[in-house]
Amino acid sequence: MKSIINQAYDPQHFNQAGLQVIESLTSAFKKAQTLPIPHTIQFELPEDQLAFWQNDLDNREDTNLLNLLENVMAKSINLHSRGYLGHQVPPTLPVTILTSAIIAYLNNGMAVYEMGMAGNAMEKLVIAWLAKHFGFGEEASGLVTSGGSLGNLTALVAARNYYCFQHPQVKADELAIMVSEEAHYSISRAFTVMGIPLENVIKIPVTDQFNIDITQLETLYANAQSKHVFCIIGCACSTATGAYDNLAAIADFANKHQIWFHVDGAHGAPAIFSPSYAHLLNGIERANSIIVDFHKMMMVPSLSTALIFRDKKLSRYTFTQNAQYLWDDSQSDEWYNSGKQTFECTKPMTILHTYAIMKIYGDRIYQENIEHLYGQAKIFAGLLKDTGKFELACEPQANIVCYRFTEGKGDLDELNRQILKRTLDKGNFYIVSTTIGGQVYLRSSIMNPMVTQSDLKELIGSIITITQEMDK
Ligand SMILES: *Cc1c(COP(=O)(O)O)cnc(C)c1O
Image 1 (cartoon, rainbow, N blue to C red):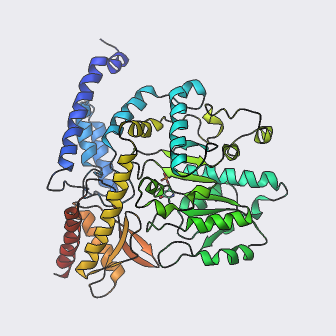
Image 2: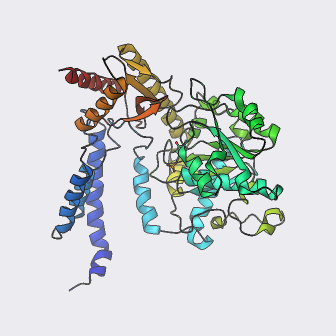
Image 3: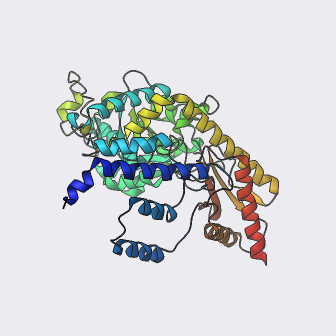
């Protein structure tokens, strides 16, 4: 009998299974792009999912990968359905499904040069291309991290080390940052990881449009005199409502006080590709560091994030363990040994996704994606208002819309919670919720470039039907 290892590595076996998987995904794509909108989620309680998979695992007779694929698709949310209008996760661009296979085959780990020869060079080129778009010069550099949370942490570590290198007498519990009260929670988590007390995160209040109130910056800074503010962060855009902070005003403030300016552009920095929306990022060219998630508005599978420093000298303050290196300008920057700057050791070569998109489709695909999705969000907001039954948290600046049904008696929070639950049970659409100013809002991130106005009308119709059924 052939050994199980030999069977598993058999090229013919691989080819057969591979072609079946591609066939199956191709028909899923076709379905996702036609009418009616395919089912988005078949919601099941955790214990029912667990029972299903326990049963599946116990059935060792069935070793067909295609059956596993069908089951896992049926039991997971379908991000490619145009009814997926929930979190900020994109339906992956088809080419990245293929690059995923290539990355898995290569499995080059990136930490040392030979294990990431192609990947390290690609990272350098992609970072340089992005840096140029953001208005940085030749001296910019950066790296790819597995996710925006790790990107924010890495940027904050660099900012802290840079500050402490110049102010060696400052203690950890005296360090502070300033950031919007709407900022992503990964910022506070990074602070905890860095061993800095959470109360040293100075929260900047926001306006009714959910961007930071820049008139309060000086007062907040003056009130924090007992602390050492080493960094201010701008959101581009915020996670909950998609609000862009005034980056130019933050840059002025950071410059005046000689502190690090970091931009959390995980979601919204790719607006730079659109001449119609790039103005939202005015001032980003003066940031010390920027993060951008490739796995949100740049359509690649999770997780892949660019961390870009305006000056490569700043990037040395990340995880360099040798202080000599920080001020030794003569030392080459050794970009090809990216392991020196990352928290990660073995790191997947996710840059291949973005490199492939950039090479095959170019900037235009990002421009079209941003313009379509940001445009659909404005259309969706208009359609909601036209019904006279919904209220918006704010006019959408990005592709995130927060809205609540207001035509009803009694507790509107409870009503909107019920709408959400029933929408989930129906499963044709997937939306989420958020709490804004203590009130429950429904929230949709429009992530699918195939979404049309009529899909959005259908969602509104579906919600209104749900409320009518609730009345009965
Ligand atoms: C999604 C997001 C993050 C976190 O990124 P992950 O890649 O999920 O770790 C950070 N900041 C903002 C503004 C985000 O939208």
